Structure formats: structure tokens, C-alpha cells
Length: 146
Image (tube, rainbow, N blue to C red; front, side, top):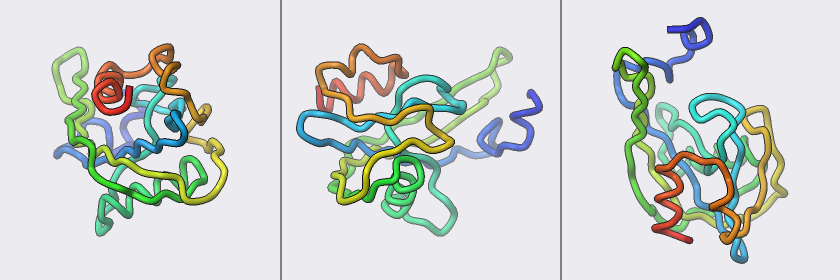
């Protein structure tokens, strides 16, 4: 385990963590963020994050979108649930998230990146395939919106 991973409970967890991601759609576009941190640093992703203790996954999604993208959302429904498991070279589980994907609409605010994102933007559905993203996310987007 490297030093940056030592203080972060996401690395080498004892139990799976729950995360939420929002598919925020607007006029043939989807809101995507370019990740500033691991996992998937530099790749494009849906905005979202971990569910905190005592917080519903709906509350978590709303909080994460406000923190990560500066927008308020209205959640419509669950789209999918998936595992994200990443193992290191020795086969140990480095990350294990159970991810809940939610369909949402922007209710207020203007998008802007924070310290967790290199960039945040509305991407036309026709251009999503050009972006560097995790294959699991690309498969989800093909199934849901592309």
C-alpha cells in the first residue's frame, strides 16, 4: 500500500462501500466530470461519491452533485446498480464499491468544477464515445442513453 492510500479508507477496505452516481440529462446532453483523484484519475465519469453514515443514497446524490458540480438536482429513479472492484498486482481488493446509478434532472445552479474534478461539462450524447472513461461506465451509458 502506498503512503497516499494509507490514510484513505477507500483503499483496501474491510467491507464494500456504497456510492451513488447521477445521470443528469439535459437536451440531448449528459453531465460528466473528469476525475482529479483515484480511482480512475483523469477519466470522465458521472458525478457522485460515497454515501455517508446516516445518509440515504438520495441525500448523498444531492449532496455530492452540489459539492462536486455546484448544482441542485431532482432525482427521478434508480437506473442501475453495479459493483466496481479493483484489485492490485497481488490480487488484493484495492477498491470495492457498490454503485447506485440514479437518473436526475438539474433543478438549479450553474455547473462548475471543484477540487475533485479537473473539468465538468455537458457532453452531447453523440460525443460521449470519444471520451476516456471506464469501460463499465461506457457500457452503462450505451444501455441507458446512447
